[in-house]
Image (cartoon, rainbow over all chains, first blue to last red):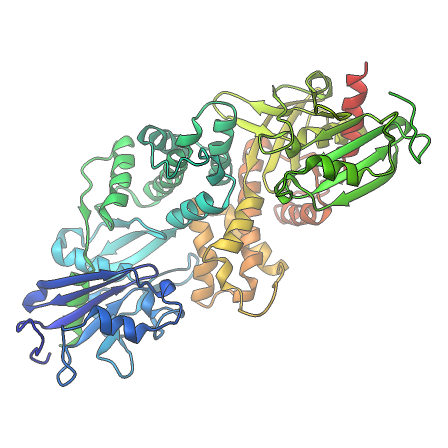
Length: 308
Length: 308
């Protein structure tokens, strides 16, 4: 990589974690050390003018010079059909080495975008961004190289690793279901009017997790129980969102644990991971470690493979 | 009941099927015969001024006279907390006789509202409106008095009858999930832009029904497969809504058949019931009869019990 001309004399790489709702940028030095980090709410769905170039220039201002720009690498929904330039999907099994072979350059910029992963066949599935977080988690904790890791989120991923590569995975729409049901369904209208955000009631969350373990009717009937329980006086209206969150996370854990067994780690936002940790403990599974902010290490690792 | 002074000399009762999105009114004669029917899009969620009185007067214009108004009976969400006057819930088991004992008068009007049904205990559930459709179906076909009937809809109901009473039931949020996911989630954004309503692709619907029978991951992962299948090239984007509909109805049928066995009848909107019939046939269950428009017979029956 070229020597840096930025305000950080030891800067080596600009790493971009660019998703649907947020944009995080990292200035990395030798061995991927984070010299500076910036975050803006400029996810690809939040840029109505699609001014990706402007957003990139602003978030990296002062990090690089026009005469000798730093290399940059990006992962996440920026490489989707709705993003800046569409990056390919690499088929599983794949790890950092396979991802590094398929970087997609953004013309007129120093940026290369990491591909997503696709699983074809009987259980088609895709990811974009999580593959890089997993590479970063493995760089920090190589012990997960043959386990199951879970990435809670809008589209939660349960990922089986083998020999440090992603072998197979399953997506659960848990976070998006919570968001759309809360905002647009009859379930979200249960919260007392004018009360603001009722937040998550821990006791109601635990009830939801428990109910999801014994539901003969599946998620479609479980969800309605959040409403019915309030109407028959069995659950305070202000607790219904906590109960709903417990139902959705509980149903994901029921299915994920039955298929994949005990997770070796949770990777993602610490507040959301804390809810999964609480639910796992309720189900008798303790001491699952949480890894946050692993994208920059993943981007560094993939860039290192690409420069070999 | 008072003798009629309306334009129909043999009119006996005004029957109102008043739900969240629609309002149907029936002028009934001797033995519940339908003399005239009217429908307006004046569901309780479509009346922003909450002018229930005005909607009632307009839809029944000319049916009754101020000096000798016809009795009226109503069922559905008009009796919910968001409706005109909140009607009680009667606990299961209950039939027409128990419902008739708990009618709630609307002050200053000739209207009485049928109660909803509540199921308390380990599987709390509620219905409002379907109890009246079931009473009407039993009036037409007493042979269902000890079977399972299914009422597809926004909140589908699977109802076990015993001796002509509703004994227990389970609600599936199938219709509301389809609606919110189509309108507000990433799944609805798959349809080709500018193409208008792609409608339901029968082949994709059948694929969705099939996929739902073998899903180890439950509905949360099934739903994401509608997106992943398009992204990996396994499903045309224009077929994704049909596939989504098949997943949701298929998952309801999987759970409902496992718990309740073969339905004796489907009750509800003919177009929606036709999708259920197609899915049931795909699963080897043929010749399930469909009953439509049973609310007026149910309202008549309940009114007869109330006047004894």
